[in-house]
Length: 389
Ligand SMILES: [Ca+2]
Ligand SMILES: [Ca+2]
Ligand SMILES: [Ca+2]
Ligand SMILES: [Ca+2]
Image 1 (spheres, rainbow, N blue to C red):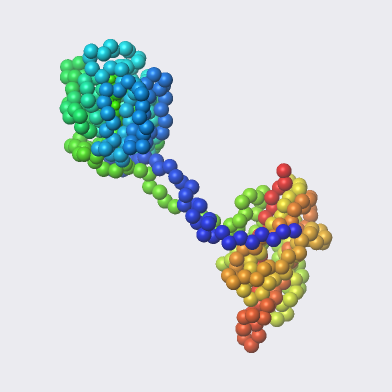
Image 2: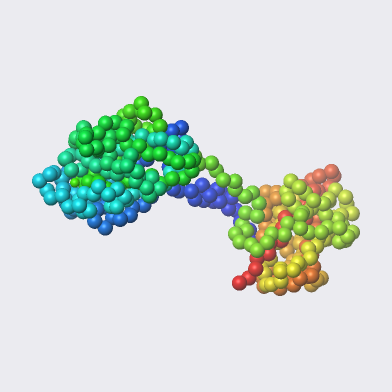
């Protein structure tokens, strides 16, 4: 028999808020903005790889024709596809190494996104180009690489972060704005994808909009992220971290015909309690019973969860088929209805066994009431059963 007493409410609250660390992207009102460096995964990157750059990135020894550009990057960070072995047309073009027209075959990035609004999106990329052979990527969705989103090209705005939504075409190598298009087929989670066309490409941010007149500006808006609503936290049985079944005093135990002192169901505290206003109900045990059911046979740790009260330290008894397996007394408390946990290890249960929980209304003489002193009501909330291995 062990007494467990915890004061972990504050610790609990802090911990719970720290659980959801990663934030997810989502589209809001026809607009999706993603920091390129916040990709979820990268595949097919054995020859060329997107490297994240920020002020904390150590120097590298890959082939590369330009310096870092994180100072003007959104979020102070961007990605570059390295090594860059073809920064100008004097350097040899090697297909499937420093160049590929096959979208989705090299350095594939994935960005899972929740789209509320399906339909047609114009894709913009904020990129930094310093040469003639570092300015093309492919865009895809869900592992598909439609013709409409291949060959995003950046011609204007060299040596500066520049937005482009132009598609390179045979008739127009620099393309025109709003010609990179993604069709989101339905509301739901989709994976926005980016893959290599030319190595040395530097990508800061992606912006998808349904508005053809949208002209991104500078770093533009912040990433569009999923809403975070708080999840409901439990308010009782706080220290029960594992269980096979919770037998609630109020709902699972029978209180009829179990003795001269009756329990009543205290809804607000989800407990059984003794009405100590009636002097005849004081200092004597009330009882409640539970009959072990089929498939509940086994060896368990039982935990009696009682509620400490300021006006008295109630006694409790747990028995199986009239054999007492645990006797407990609540500790003193300055906070009413604080949960107290009493463990009973190695308890064998068999179908048909009667588990009886008993408690007493008592006073500690500390709190005056109606010419006498107030009584604790022998409250208890649950008997938790946890099967041993
Ligand atoms: Ca570089
Ligand atoms: Ca290149
Ligand atoms: Ca570059
Ligand atoms: Ca960025």
